[in-house]
Image (cartoon, rainbow over all chains, first blue to last red; front, top):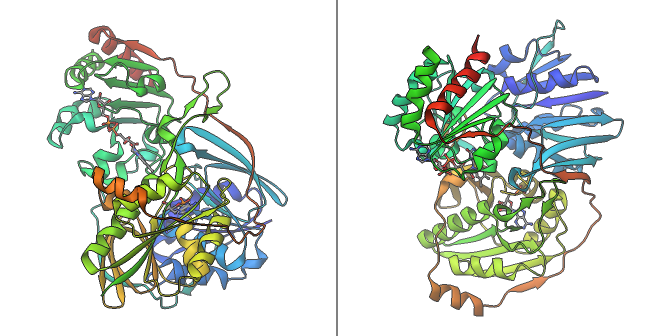
Length: 296
Length: 249
Ligand SMILES: Cc1cc2nc3c(=O)[nH]c(=O)nc-3n(C[C@H](O)[C@H](O)[C@H](O)COP(=O)(O)OP(=O)(O)OC[C@H]3O[C@@H](n4cnc5c(N)ncnc54)[C@H](O)[C@@H]3O)c2cc1C
Ligand SMILES: Nc1ncnc2c1ncn2[C@@H]1O[C@H](COP(=O)(O)O)[C@@H](O)[C@H]1O
Protein backbone atom coordinates (compact mmCIF):
# COMPACT_ATOMS: atom_id res chain seq x y z
CA UNK A 1 0.00 0.00 0.00
CA UNK A 2 1.09 3.56 -0.65
CA UNK A 3 0.40 6.46 1.70
CA UNK A 4 0.68 10.20 1.30
CA UNK A 5 1.20 11.99 4.61
CA UNK A 6 1.01 15.76 5.01
CA UNK A 7 1.36 18.16 7.90
CA UNK A 8 2.75 21.66 8.19
CA UNK A 9 4.20 20.47 11.52
CA UNK A 10 7.04 17.98 11.03
CA UNK A 11 6.54 16.22 14.34
CA UNK A 12 2.98 15.35 13.33
CA UNK A 13 4.21 13.83 10.08
CA UNK A 14 6.66 11.70 12.08
CA UNK A 15 3.85 10.42 14.32
CA UNK A 16 1.67 9.32 11.42
CA UNK A 17 4.57 7.98 9.33
CA UNK A 18 5.72 5.85 12.27
CA UNK A 19 2.31 4.22 12.42
CA UNK A 20 2.01 3.76 8.64
CA UNK A 21 5.49 2.61 7.66
CA UNK A 22 4.80 -0.97 8.75
CA UNK A 23 1.73 -1.07 6.54
CA UNK A 24 3.25 0.20 3.33
CA UNK A 25 5.27 2.84 1.56
CA UNK A 26 5.10 6.32 3.06
CA UNK A 27 5.64 9.52 1.10
CA UNK A 28 5.72 12.53 3.39
CA UNK A 29 5.04 16.17 2.56
CA UNK A 30 5.87 19.00 4.92
CA UNK A 31 7.26 22.52 5.00
CA UNK A 32 10.95 22.91 4.26
CA UNK A 33 11.75 24.33 7.69
CA UNK A 34 10.42 21.12 9.28
CA UNK A 35 12.96 18.90 7.48
CA UNK A 36 14.91 17.83 10.58
CA UNK A 37 11.90 16.37 12.37
CA UNK A 38 10.78 14.28 9.42
CA UNK A 39 14.09 12.99 8.07
CA UNK A 40 14.14 9.78 10.15
CA UNK A 41 10.41 9.10 10.11
CA UNK A 42 10.76 6.09 7.84
CA UNK A 43 9.35 7.89 4.83
CA UNK A 44 10.57 6.60 1.48
CA UNK A 45 10.14 9.96 -0.15
CA UNK A 46 10.18 13.35 1.52
CA UNK A 47 8.79 16.33 -0.34
CA UNK A 48 9.73 19.69 1.20
CA UNK A 49 7.38 22.50 0.32
CA UNK A 50 8.81 25.99 -0.20
CA UNK A 51 6.85 29.23 0.02
CA UNK A 52 4.04 30.63 2.14
CA UNK A 53 1.58 27.83 2.82
CA UNK A 54 -2.16 28.36 2.45
CA UNK A 55 -4.66 25.55 2.10
CA UNK A 56 -5.19 26.46 -1.57
CA UNK A 57 -1.61 26.18 -2.75
CA UNK A 58 -0.78 23.23 -0.48
CA UNK A 59 -3.75 21.16 -1.66
CA UNK A 60 -2.81 22.13 -5.22
CA UNK A 61 0.71 20.80 -4.64
CA UNK A 62 -0.58 17.52 -3.20
CA UNK A 63 -3.15 17.02 -5.94
CA UNK A 64 -0.42 17.66 -8.52
CA UNK A 65 1.82 14.99 -6.96
CA UNK A 66 0.31 11.85 -8.49
CA UNK A 67 -2.45 11.84 -5.89
CA UNK A 68 -4.47 9.04 -7.54
CA UNK A 69 -1.55 6.62 -7.11
CA UNK A 70 -1.92 6.69 -3.32
CA UNK A 71 -4.24 4.33 -1.47
CA UNK A 72 -4.75 6.75 1.41
CA UNK A 73 -4.00 10.39 2.20
CA UNK A 74 -3.28 11.04 5.89
CA UNK A 75 -3.30 14.64 7.07
CA UNK A 76 -2.62 15.87 10.57
CA UNK A 77 -5.51 17.83 12.04
CA UNK A 78 -3.98 21.29 12.31
CA UNK A 79 -5.90 24.39 11.12
CA UNK A 80 -4.05 24.19 7.79
CA UNK A 81 -4.35 20.40 7.58
CA UNK A 82 -8.12 20.31 8.07
CA UNK A 83 -8.61 22.86 5.30
CA UNK A 84 -6.27 20.98 2.99
CA UNK A 85 -8.23 17.75 3.63
CA UNK A 86 -11.50 19.53 2.79
CA UNK A 87 -10.11 21.00 -0.42
CA UNK A 88 -8.66 17.68 -1.58
CA UNK A 89 -11.94 15.95 -0.80
CA UNK A 90 -13.93 18.56 -2.73
CA UNK A 91 -11.63 18.21 -5.69
CA UNK A 92 -11.34 14.40 -5.81
CA UNK A 93 -14.75 13.41 -4.51
CA UNK A 94 -13.19 11.11 -1.89
CA UNK A 95 -14.77 11.36 1.55
CA UNK A 96 -12.90 12.15 4.76
CA UNK A 97 -12.67 10.21 8.02
CA UNK A 98 -12.03 13.12 10.34
CA UNK A 99 -10.31 13.70 13.67
CA UNK A 100 -9.19 10.09 14.03
CA UNK A 101 -7.02 9.01 16.97
CA UNK A 102 -6.71 5.32 16.09
CA UNK A 103 -7.33 3.20 13.02
CA UNK A 104 -6.72 -0.11 11.29
CA UNK A 105 -6.74 -0.78 7.57
CA UNK A 106 -8.25 -3.78 5.88
CA UNK A 107 -7.67 -3.30 2.15
CA UNK A 108 -10.27 -0.82 0.89
CA UNK A 109 -11.89 -0.37 4.30
CA UNK A 110 -10.56 1.58 7.22
CA UNK A 111 -11.78 1.19 10.78
CA UNK A 112 -11.45 4.41 12.71
CA UNK A 113 -11.87 5.71 16.24
CA UNK A 114 -12.77 9.27 17.12
CA UNK A 115 -14.41 11.14 19.95
CA UNK A 116 -18.04 12.12 19.54
CA UNK A 117 -20.63 14.17 21.43
CA UNK A 118 -17.92 16.64 22.40
CA UNK A 119 -15.73 13.90 23.86
CA UNK A 120 -18.34 11.96 25.83
CA UNK A 121 -18.21 8.90 23.62
CA UNK A 122 -15.79 7.12 21.35
CA UNK A 123 -17.24 6.37 17.94
CA UNK A 124 -15.88 3.42 16.00
CA UNK A 125 -16.66 3.49 12.31
CA UNK A 126 -15.96 1.51 9.19
CA UNK A 127 -15.21 3.78 6.27
CA UNK A 128 -14.48 3.67 2.60
CA UNK A 129 -12.90 7.11 3.00
CA UNK A 130 -9.51 7.60 1.40
CA UNK A 131 -8.66 10.82 3.24
CA UNK A 132 -8.03 10.72 6.97
CA UNK A 133 -7.38 13.62 9.35
CA UNK A 134 -5.48 12.52 12.44
CA UNK A 135 -5.55 14.20 15.85
CA UNK A 136 -2.00 15.35 16.69
CA UNK A 137 -0.45 13.34 19.49
CA UNK A 138 -2.28 10.13 18.64
CA UNK A 139 0.82 8.07 17.89
CA UNK A 140 4.30 7.82 19.35
CA UNK A 141 6.95 8.80 16.77
CA UNK A 142 10.11 6.69 16.60
CA UNK A 143 13.18 6.90 14.40
CA UNK A 144 13.76 4.59 11.49
CA UNK A 145 16.98 3.67 9.74
CA UNK A 146 15.51 4.21 6.30
CA UNK A 147 16.72 7.44 4.72
CA UNK A 148 14.22 9.44 2.80
CA UNK A 149 14.76 10.42 -0.77
CA UNK A 150 14.40 14.20 -0.61
CA UNK A 151 13.04 16.67 -3.08
CA UNK A 152 11.71 20.21 -2.91
CA UNK A 153 8.55 21.60 -4.40
CA UNK A 154 7.74 25.29 -4.72
CA UNK A 155 4.23 26.30 -3.71
CA UNK A 156 2.37 28.41 -6.24
CA UNK A 157 1.01 31.88 -5.53
CA UNK A 158 -2.29 31.91 -3.72
CA UNK A 159 -5.43 34.03 -3.63
CA UNK A 160 -4.88 34.47 0.08
CA UNK A 161 -2.17 36.97 0.96
CA UNK A 162 -0.01 37.11 4.06
CA UNK A 163 0.00 40.68 5.34
CA UNK A 164 1.77 40.31 8.64
CA UNK A 165 3.29 37.51 10.66
CA UNK A 166 4.67 37.44 14.17
CA UNK A 167 6.26 34.40 15.75
CA UNK A 168 4.82 33.78 19.13
CA UNK A 169 7.30 33.14 21.84
CA UNK A 170 7.78 29.43 22.06
CA UNK A 171 9.27 28.04 25.22
CA UNK A 172 10.20 24.95 23.25
CA UNK A 173 8.33 22.82 25.77
CA UNK A 174 6.65 19.67 24.72
CA UNK A 175 4.15 18.66 27.37
CA UNK A 176 3.29 15.59 25.33
CA UNK A 177 6.64 14.13 26.31
CA UNK A 178 6.41 14.98 30.02
CA UNK A 179 6.43 12.22 32.64
CA UNK A 180 4.70 14.33 35.29
CA UNK A 181 2.27 17.16 34.53
CA UNK A 182 0.92 19.72 36.98
CA UNK A 183 -2.10 21.24 35.27
CA UNK A 184 -3.99 24.31 36.43
CA UNK A 185 -7.51 25.42 35.68
CA UNK A 186 -9.58 28.52 36.20
CA UNK A 187 -9.54 27.74 39.92
CA UNK A 188 -5.98 29.10 40.08
CA UNK A 189 -7.59 32.54 39.83
CA UNK A 190 -4.76 34.64 38.42
CA UNK A 191 -1.52 34.50 36.50
CA UNK A 192 0.46 35.50 39.60
CA UNK A 193 -0.96 32.59 41.58
CA UNK A 194 0.77 30.13 39.24
CA UNK A 195 4.02 31.00 41.08
CA UNK A 196 2.53 29.44 44.20
CA UNK A 197 2.30 26.02 42.67
CA UNK A 198 5.77 26.06 41.11
CA UNK A 199 7.25 24.30 44.20
CA UNK A 200 5.10 21.28 43.28
CA UNK A 201 6.27 21.47 39.69
CA UNK A 202 9.92 21.43 40.75
CA UNK A 203 9.43 18.82 43.50
CA UNK A 204 7.98 16.44 40.92
CA UNK A 205 10.34 17.59 38.15
CA UNK A 206 7.19 18.04 36.12
CA UNK A 207 5.92 20.32 33.41
CA UNK A 208 3.19 22.87 33.92
CA UNK A 209 0.09 22.77 31.74
CA UNK A 210 -3.43 24.16 31.84
CA UNK A 211 -7.05 24.02 30.80
CA UNK A 212 -8.32 25.93 27.81
CA UNK A 213 -9.50 29.08 29.65
CA UNK A 214 -6.11 29.37 31.35
CA UNK A 215 -4.15 29.01 28.10
CA UNK A 216 -6.45 30.60 25.51
CA UNK A 217 -8.91 33.00 27.12
CA UNK A 218 -6.71 34.46 29.85
CA UNK A 219 -3.31 33.54 28.40
CA UNK A 220 -1.89 32.87 31.86
CA UNK A 221 0.04 30.04 30.19
CA UNK A 222 1.07 29.72 26.56
CA UNK A 223 -1.18 27.95 24.11
CA UNK A 224 1.27 25.08 23.63
CA UNK A 225 0.51 24.07 27.23
CA UNK A 226 -3.22 23.59 26.70
CA UNK A 227 -4.50 20.09 27.43
CA UNK A 228 -7.73 18.84 25.91
CA UNK A 229 -9.83 18.06 22.89
CA UNK A 230 -8.62 21.15 21.07
CA UNK A 231 -5.23 21.17 22.79
CA UNK A 232 -2.51 18.63 23.51
CA UNK A 233 -3.21 14.99 24.21
CA UNK A 234 -0.95 13.99 27.05
CA UNK A 235 -0.18 10.67 28.70
CA UNK A 236 2.16 11.29 31.63
CA UNK A 237 2.78 8.85 34.47
CA UNK A 238 1.12 11.36 36.81
CA UNK A 239 -1.34 14.11 35.87
CA UNK A 240 -2.14 16.51 38.69
CA UNK A 241 -5.26 18.61 38.00
CA UNK A 242 -5.51 21.69 40.23
CA UNK A 243 -8.69 23.77 40.13
CA UNK A 244 -9.91 22.05 36.96
CA UNK A 245 -13.57 21.10 36.91
CA UNK A 246 -13.07 18.16 34.55
CA UNK A 247 -15.29 19.06 31.61
CA UNK A 248 -15.31 16.36 29.01
CA UNK A 249 -13.28 18.43 26.53
CA UNK A 250 -10.50 18.58 29.08
CA UNK A 251 -10.69 14.88 29.98
CA UNK A 252 -10.30 14.02 26.28
CA UNK A 253 -6.76 15.38 26.45
CA UNK A 254 -5.52 13.59 29.59
CA UNK A 255 -7.39 10.32 29.54
CA UNK A 256 -4.23 8.41 28.65
CA UNK A 257 -2.47 9.40 31.89
CA UNK A 258 -1.36 6.56 34.14
CA UNK A 259 -2.30 8.15 37.48
CA UNK A 260 -4.61 11.14 37.81
CA UNK A 261 -4.63 13.31 40.93
CA UNK A 262 -7.29 16.00 41.35
CA UNK A 263 -7.57 18.86 43.79
CA UNK A 264 -10.83 20.79 43.74
CA UNK A 265 -12.82 22.64 46.35
CA UNK A 266 -16.10 21.36 44.94
CA UNK A 267 -16.64 17.76 45.96
CA UNK A 268 -19.13 17.28 43.11
CA UNK A 269 -16.70 18.43 40.42
CA UNK A 270 -16.71 15.92 37.54
CA UNK A 271 -12.92 15.61 37.72
CA UNK A 272 -13.41 13.40 40.79
CA UNK A 273 -15.04 10.81 38.52
CA UNK A 274 -11.92 10.71 36.37
CA UNK A 275 -9.18 10.59 38.99
CA UNK A 276 -7.34 7.94 40.96
CA UNK A 277 -6.71 10.20 43.95
CA UNK A 278 -8.79 13.25 44.75
CA UNK A 279 -8.51 15.81 47.51
CA UNK A 280 -11.45 18.06 48.26
CA UNK A 281 -10.27 21.50 49.31
CA UNK A 282 -8.52 24.75 48.48
CA UNK A 283 -5.60 24.07 46.16
CA UNK A 284 -3.51 26.83 47.77
CA UNK A 285 -3.64 24.99 51.09
CA UNK A 286 -3.28 21.50 49.70
CA UNK A 287 -0.43 22.01 47.27
CA UNK A 288 2.07 23.03 50.03
CA UNK A 289 1.01 19.96 52.02
CA UNK A 290 1.72 17.66 49.07
CA UNK A 291 5.11 19.33 48.54
CA UNK A 292 5.93 18.91 52.21
CA UNK A 293 5.05 15.22 52.06
CA UNK A 294 7.09 14.74 48.91
CA UNK A 295 10.16 16.10 50.69
CA UNK A 296 9.86 13.66 53.59
CA UNK B 1 -19.20 48.46 1.50
CA UNK B 2 -22.48 46.72 2.28
CA UNK B 3 -21.90 43.01 2.66
CA UNK B 4 -24.02 40.05 1.74
CA UNK B 5 -23.05 37.56 4.43
CA UNK B 6 -23.99 33.89 4.67
CA UNK B 7 -23.63 32.18 8.03
CA UNK B 8 -23.73 28.40 8.44
CA UNK B 9 -25.54 27.25 11.55
CA UNK B 10 -25.49 23.76 12.93
CA UNK B 11 -28.18 22.50 15.19
CA UNK B 12 -27.09 19.87 17.69
CA UNK B 13 -28.53 17.87 20.49
CA UNK B 14 -27.46 19.57 23.74
CA UNK B 15 -24.23 17.66 24.35
CA UNK B 16 -23.83 19.14 27.83
CA UNK B 17 -26.97 17.29 28.90
CA UNK B 18 -26.04 13.92 27.41
CA UNK B 19 -25.27 11.28 30.01
CA UNK B 20 -23.82 7.89 29.32
CA UNK B 21 -25.26 4.78 30.91
CA UNK B 22 -22.83 3.66 33.63
CA UNK B 23 -23.40 -0.03 32.79
CA UNK B 24 -23.57 -0.14 29.01
CA UNK B 25 -21.71 3.06 28.15
CA UNK B 26 -24.51 4.00 25.75
CA UNK B 27 -25.21 7.72 25.42
CA UNK B 28 -28.71 8.58 26.62
CA UNK B 29 -30.08 11.10 24.12
CA UNK B 30 -33.80 10.60 24.59
CA UNK B 31 -35.66 13.75 25.57
CA UNK B 32 -32.63 15.98 25.32
CA UNK B 33 -33.40 19.25 23.52
CA UNK B 34 -31.69 20.63 20.44
CA UNK B 35 -29.77 23.89 20.45
CA UNK B 36 -27.44 25.98 18.30
CA UNK B 37 -23.94 24.47 18.20
CA UNK B 38 -21.29 26.50 20.09
CA UNK B 39 -19.06 27.57 17.19
CA UNK B 40 -22.09 28.34 15.05
CA UNK B 41 -23.00 30.91 17.70
CA UNK B 42 -19.58 32.50 17.37
CA UNK B 43 -20.09 32.48 13.59
CA UNK B 44 -23.49 34.18 13.92
CA UNK B 45 -22.07 36.82 16.28
CA UNK B 46 -19.16 37.48 13.90
CA UNK B 47 -21.53 37.77 10.93
CA UNK B 48 -23.88 40.14 12.74
CA UNK B 49 -21.00 42.32 13.95
CA UNK B 50 -19.62 42.51 10.42
CA UNK B 51 -23.04 43.60 9.17
CA UNK B 52 -23.43 46.16 11.95
CA UNK B 53 -20.12 47.71 10.98
CA UNK B 54 -20.38 47.63 7.19
CA UNK B 55 -24.09 47.46 6.47
CA UNK B 56 -25.65 44.65 4.49
CA UNK B 57 -27.52 41.49 5.28
CA UNK B 58 -26.97 38.14 6.99
CA UNK B 59 -28.54 34.96 5.66
CA UNK B 60 -28.46 31.90 7.90
CA UNK B 61 -28.42 28.38 6.48
CA UNK B 62 -29.08 25.26 8.52
CA UNK B 63 -28.83 21.81 7.02
CA UNK B 64 -30.94 20.15 9.67
CA UNK B 65 -34.30 18.61 10.34
CA UNK B 66 -37.84 19.84 10.80
CA UNK B 67 -36.83 20.52 14.42
CA UNK B 68 -34.48 23.31 13.37
CA UNK B 69 -36.98 26.17 13.62
CA UNK B 70 -36.02 26.99 17.20
CA UNK B 71 -32.36 27.25 16.24
CA UNK B 72 -33.16 29.60 13.36
CA UNK B 73 -35.32 31.75 15.63
CA UNK B 74 -32.41 32.03 18.04
CA UNK B 75 -30.26 33.12 15.10
CA UNK B 76 -32.89 35.71 14.10
CA UNK B 77 -32.93 37.05 17.64
CA UNK B 78 -29.17 37.47 17.47
CA UNK B 79 -29.48 39.54 14.29
CA UNK B 80 -29.67 37.16 11.34
CA UNK B 81 -32.00 38.67 8.70
CA UNK B 82 -33.08 35.72 6.55
CA UNK B 83 -33.11 32.02 7.28
CA UNK B 84 -33.15 28.92 5.15
CA UNK B 85 -33.56 25.48 6.66
CA UNK B 86 -32.73 22.58 4.42
CA UNK B 87 -34.12 19.35 5.82
CA UNK B 88 -32.71 15.85 5.45
CA UNK B 89 -29.79 15.92 7.87
CA UNK B 90 -29.26 12.40 9.13
CA UNK B 91 -26.08 12.47 11.16
CA UNK B 92 -22.43 13.22 10.77
CA UNK B 93 -21.55 13.15 7.05
CA UNK B 94 -19.49 16.24 6.22
CA UNK B 95 -19.24 15.53 2.49
CA UNK B 96 -23.02 15.37 2.19
CA UNK B 97 -23.45 18.46 4.39
CA UNK B 98 -20.97 20.38 2.24
CA UNK B 99 -22.69 19.23 -0.94
CA UNK B 100 -26.16 20.28 0.20
CA UNK B 101 -25.00 23.63 1.56
CA UNK B 102 -22.78 24.56 -1.39
CA UNK B 103 -25.53 23.69 -3.89
CA UNK B 104 -27.79 26.09 -1.99
CA UNK B 105 -25.13 28.80 -1.90
CA UNK B 106 -24.61 28.50 -5.66
CA UNK B 107 -28.18 29.75 -6.05
CA UNK B 108 -27.34 32.86 -3.99
CA UNK B 109 -25.01 34.38 -6.53
CA UNK B 110 -24.21 37.76 -5.00
CA UNK B 111 -22.79 36.76 -1.62
CA UNK B 112 -19.51 38.26 -0.38
CA UNK B 113 -18.53 36.07 2.53
CA UNK B 114 -19.51 32.75 4.10
CA UNK B 115 -18.85 32.50 7.84
CA UNK B 116 -18.81 29.22 9.77
CA UNK B 117 -17.17 27.62 12.81
CA UNK B 118 -13.72 26.07 12.48
CA UNK B 119 -14.72 22.86 14.32
CA UNK B 120 -18.15 22.08 15.63
CA UNK B 121 -18.57 21.23 19.30
CA UNK B 122 -20.27 17.84 18.94
CA UNK B 123 -18.56 16.05 16.07
CA UNK B 124 -15.46 18.20 15.89
CA UNK B 125 -15.02 17.40 12.23
CA UNK B 126 -13.42 20.66 11.13
CA UNK B 127 -13.46 19.85 7.45
CA UNK B 128 -16.48 21.86 6.34
CA UNK B 129 -14.60 25.14 5.74
CA UNK B 130 -12.27 23.43 3.24
CA UNK B 131 -15.04 21.35 1.67
CA UNK B 132 -17.31 24.34 1.11
CA UNK B 133 -14.52 26.59 -0.19
CA UNK B 134 -13.41 23.78 -2.49
CA UNK B 135 -16.86 23.10 -3.88
CA UNK B 136 -17.44 26.82 -4.52
CA UNK B 137 -13.86 27.48 -5.72
CA UNK B 138 -13.39 30.47 -3.43
CA UNK B 139 -10.44 31.34 -1.16
CA UNK B 140 -10.50 30.46 2.48
CA UNK B 141 -9.42 32.44 5.52
CA UNK B 142 -9.28 30.03 8.43
CA UNK B 143 -9.31 30.27 12.22
CA UNK B 144 -10.15 33.95 12.52
CA UNK B 145 -9.94 35.73 15.88
CA UNK B 146 -11.07 38.97 14.19
CA UNK B 147 -12.56 39.92 10.81
CA UNK B 148 -12.46 43.19 8.90
CA UNK B 149 -13.92 44.07 5.53
CA UNK B 150 -12.32 46.56 3.18
CA UNK B 151 -13.39 47.18 -0.39
CA UNK B 152 -13.53 43.90 -2.20
CA UNK B 153 -11.42 42.15 0.42
CA UNK B 154 -11.70 40.44 3.78
CA UNK B 155 -8.87 40.61 6.27
CA UNK B 156 -8.58 38.36 9.31
CA UNK B 157 -6.26 37.97 12.23
CA UNK B 158 -5.55 34.45 13.34
CA UNK B 159 -3.54 32.69 16.01
CA UNK B 160 -1.80 29.57 14.81
CA UNK B 161 0.10 27.25 17.12
CA UNK B 162 3.41 29.11 16.88
CA UNK B 163 2.56 32.39 15.15
CA UNK B 164 0.03 35.18 14.78
CA UNK B 165 -0.90 36.20 11.25
CA UNK B 166 -2.93 38.77 9.41
CA UNK B 167 -4.09 37.42 6.05
CA UNK B 168 -6.51 38.63 3.41
CA UNK B 169 -8.39 37.38 0.39
CA UNK B 170 -10.68 38.89 -2.26
CA UNK B 171 -14.43 38.35 -1.86
CA UNK B 172 -16.29 36.09 -2.18
CA UNK B 173 -14.50 33.92 0.34
CA UNK B 174 -15.03 31.52 3.23
CA UNK B 175 -14.06 32.59 6.76
CA UNK B 176 -13.91 30.08 9.61
CA UNK B 177 -13.94 31.44 13.15
CA UNK B 178 -12.60 30.19 16.48
CA UNK B 179 -14.25 30.26 19.87
CA UNK B 180 -12.01 33.14 20.93
CA UNK B 181 -13.32 35.56 18.30
CA UNK B 182 -16.23 36.87 20.38
CA UNK B 183 -18.71 36.35 23.15
CA UNK B 184 -22.02 35.55 21.42
CA UNK B 185 -24.75 37.96 22.52
CA UNK B 186 -27.74 36.93 24.61
CA UNK B 187 -30.61 38.61 22.77
CA UNK B 188 -33.19 40.58 24.81
CA UNK B 189 -36.66 39.12 25.26
CA UNK B 190 -38.31 41.59 22.86
CA UNK B 191 -35.98 40.52 20.09
CA UNK B 192 -36.66 36.87 20.81
CA UNK B 193 -40.41 37.49 20.57
CA UNK B 194 -40.05 39.42 17.33
CA UNK B 195 -37.87 36.63 15.95
CA UNK B 196 -40.66 34.15 16.62
CA UNK B 197 -42.88 35.91 14.09
CA UNK B 198 -40.35 36.09 11.29
CA UNK B 199 -40.82 33.63 8.42
CA UNK B 200 -38.32 30.83 7.83
CA UNK B 201 -37.86 29.21 4.45
CA UNK B 202 -37.80 25.44 4.60
CA UNK B 203 -36.54 23.50 1.60
CA UNK B 204 -35.78 19.96 0.53
CA UNK B 205 -32.20 19.21 -0.37
CA UNK B 206 -30.95 18.14 -3.75
CA UNK B 207 -30.07 14.72 -2.42
CA UNK B 208 -27.16 12.71 -3.65
CA UNK B 209 -25.77 9.42 -2.55
CA UNK B 210 -22.75 10.19 -0.39
CA UNK B 211 -22.06 7.46 2.11
CA UNK B 212 -21.16 8.25 5.67
CA UNK B 213 -19.00 5.92 7.69
CA UNK B 214 -20.84 2.93 9.14
CA UNK B 215 -21.00 3.36 12.92
CA UNK B 216 -19.82 0.18 14.63
CA UNK B 217 -20.15 1.50 18.16
CA UNK B 218 -20.53 4.78 20.02
CA UNK B 219 -19.91 4.29 23.73
CA UNK B 220 -18.43 6.13 26.69
CA UNK B 221 -14.75 5.34 27.07
CA UNK B 222 -14.15 2.98 29.94
CA UNK B 223 -12.69 4.63 32.98
CA UNK B 224 -10.89 2.36 35.38
CA UNK B 225 -9.76 5.06 37.75
CA UNK B 226 -9.59 4.26 41.47
CA UNK B 227 -11.60 7.32 42.52
CA UNK B 228 -10.14 7.44 46.00
CA UNK B 229 -11.40 10.80 47.28
CA UNK B 230 -10.11 12.41 50.48
CA UNK B 231 -11.92 15.16 52.34
CA UNK B 232 -9.17 15.15 54.95
CA UNK B 233 -6.42 17.26 53.38
CA UNK B 234 -3.58 15.90 55.54
CA UNK B 235 -4.37 12.27 54.86
CA UNK B 236 -5.02 13.07 51.20
CA UNK B 237 -1.73 14.87 50.69
CA UNK B 238 0.14 12.00 52.30
CA UNK B 239 -1.46 9.40 50.03
CA UNK B 240 -1.04 11.57 46.96
CA UNK B 241 2.63 12.21 47.75
CA UNK B 242 3.15 8.47 48.14
CA UNK B 243 1.55 7.78 44.77
CA UNK B 244 3.57 10.51 43.06
CA UNK B 245 6.82 9.37 44.64
CA UNK B 246 6.34 5.84 43.35
CA UNK B 247 6.21 7.25 39.82
CA UNK B 248 9.05 9.77 40.04
CA UNK B 249 12.12 7.65 40.58
C1 LIG C 1 -15.31 22.82 21.05
C2 LIG C 1 -14.74 22.96 22.43
C3 LIG C 1 -13.41 22.56 22.64
C4 LIG C 1 -12.84 22.68 23.91
N1 LIG C 1 -11.55 22.26 24.10
C5 LIG C 1 -11.01 22.32 25.34
C6 LIG C 1 -9.67 21.86 25.59
O1 LIG C 1 -8.95 21.44 24.68
N2 LIG C 1 -9.20 21.93 26.85
C7 LIG C 1 -9.95 22.39 27.91
O2 LIG C 1 -9.44 22.39 29.05
N3 LIG C 1 -11.20 22.84 27.69
C8 LIG C 1 -11.74 22.82 26.44
N4 LIG C 1 -13.00 23.31 26.24
C9 LIG C 1 -13.65 24.05 27.35
C10 LIG C 1 -14.32 23.15 28.38
O3 LIG C 1 -15.64 22.89 27.99
C11 LIG C 1 -14.37 23.86 29.75
O4 LIG C 1 -14.97 25.11 29.60
C12 LIG C 1 -12.99 24.06 30.37
O5 LIG C 1 -12.24 22.85 30.36
C13 LIG C 1 -13.14 24.53 31.80
O6 LIG C 1 -11.87 24.86 32.33
P1 LIG C 1 -11.58 24.83 33.89
O7 LIG C 1 -11.82 23.49 34.42
O8 LIG C 1 -10.22 25.42 34.05
O9 LIG C 1 -12.59 25.92 34.46
P2 LIG C 1 -13.98 25.75 35.33
O10 LIG C 1 -14.85 24.79 34.61
O11 LIG C 1 -14.41 27.10 35.57
O12 LIG C 1 -13.48 25.04 36.63
C14 LIG C 1 -12.76 25.66 37.66
C15 LIG C 1 -12.74 24.70 38.84
O13 LIG C 1 -11.87 25.20 39.84
C16 LIG C 1 -12.41 24.90 41.11
N5 LIG C 1 -11.80 25.85 42.05
C17 LIG C 1 -11.98 27.19 42.12
N6 LIG C 1 -11.20 27.73 43.07
C18 LIG C 1 -10.51 26.70 43.62
C19 LIG C 1 -9.53 26.63 44.66
N7 LIG C 1 -9.09 27.70 45.31
N8 LIG C 1 -9.04 25.40 44.97
C20 LIG C 1 -9.48 24.29 44.33
N9 LIG C 1 -10.39 24.32 43.33
C21 LIG C 1 -10.90 25.51 42.99
C22 LIG C 1 -13.90 25.04 40.92
O14 LIG C 1 -14.61 24.26 41.90
C23 LIG C 1 -14.09 24.50 39.51
O15 LIG C 1 -14.39 23.10 39.53
C24 LIG C 1 -13.60 23.20 24.98
C25 LIG C 1 -14.92 23.57 24.77
C26 LIG C 1 -15.50 23.46 23.51
C27 LIG C 1 -16.93 23.86 23.31
N1 LIG D 1 -25.52 20.73 9.23
C1 LIG D 1 -24.98 21.97 9.19
N2 LIG D 1 -25.70 23.04 8.76
C2 LIG D 1 -25.16 24.29 8.72
N3 LIG D 1 -23.90 24.55 9.11
C3 LIG D 1 -23.13 23.53 9.55
C4 LIG D 1 -23.62 22.19 9.62
N4 LIG D 1 -22.63 21.40 10.10
C5 LIG D 1 -21.58 22.21 10.33
N5 LIG D 1 -21.87 23.50 10.01
C6 LIG D 1 -20.98 24.67 10.14
O1 LIG D 1 -19.63 24.24 9.99
C7 LIG D 1 -18.88 24.50 11.16
C8 LIG D 1 -17.81 23.44 11.35
O2 LIG D 1 -18.41 22.18 11.45
P1 LIG D 1 -17.59 20.82 11.27
O3 LIG D 1 -16.72 20.98 10.07
O4 LIG D 1 -18.62 19.77 11.15
O5 LIG D 1 -16.77 20.64 12.52
C9 LIG D 1 -19.92 24.61 12.27
O6 LIG D 1 -19.45 25.38 13.37
C10 LIG D 1 -21.06 25.30 11.53
O7 LIG D 1 -20.82 26.69 11.40
